[in-house]
Length: 289
Image (cartoon, rainbow, N blue to C red):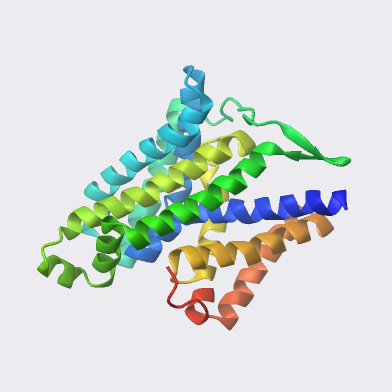
């Protein structure tokens, strides 16, 4: 019984991990149809923000929950104003531009911090026991904050004026502009929101994964697989895909090892897209956010 409980915690953490790294991408891609290949580097910068801030004596919780999302949101706003705003509706150009941006960010961070692993952070919450098995309290915290983040984004997009304007602008930008909405400002704020969520995810995961300039490459594939498998709905799609893929990955990893777990994740995504080309929410939860 203790083993089952400890294993269940690991499965739920795997689901939360996928949902967390994919949510920022889902906001930008699901709402703006911008494929951001620099998403992994935004996660990486969130992690480095936490490392640098804690090395300077900043409280780790402030670094994770405040500084990481703020820094990456600011970078996201600059990127949208300088680069992305000229490429809306041009998918291939956006892919190339954000790919170049990812290479630039990796190069800048490597030049500043070097190619080696940054100072390893200890999780700010210790382990706890489930019978004879140990489990990470920090992983439970990530599960809880991922659920809270999904609830907060849902409330923001569903009930706030900003959320209403953002959803209306993404659906019919011409009508929104005719009604006096500054669509340029809405695009900027939406991209900044997605970047902030991404920075928060990178900061939260830094004490577990460590941080190196190339760590974004390990994030980006899982994020895209989760978001594309989920389909058009931002929260319902990312959440359901994370549940299916995260559970599959953890079970196969336990049975056959991490390599087979990654293969199973990719295979499950291929099956989902073969059966449901528009993603899970293309067939189910069509009216969901």
